[in-house]
Length: 107
Image 1 (cartoon, rainbow, N blue to C red):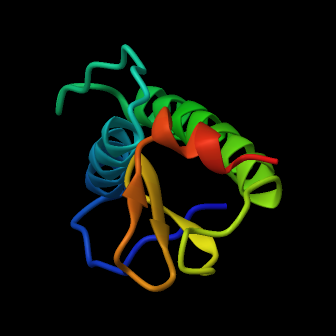
Image 2 (image 1 turned 180 degrees about the horizontal axis):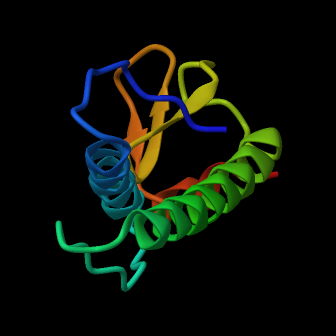
């Protein structure tokens, strides 16, 4: 389950709208095209449905990256890789790979 920084909201609707916007930002960073369009006029139930679907999509992408992570070799300096944005950065901090580039480090 994804967690976000606690923030006070005037209503449950505002909270859901805010979370959906955050989830869309995360999906965009991961390069996921969701097709969702948000509007402040959406009903709470619609927002909660979008929120649940976005969480599923992002969790699935995260799980796919974890599977890739398990098969990865170390960077040229021997550090492990960690997901960062849409790609991977070594724990040493000096190497970054896009999803296309990381294939060279797969076993």
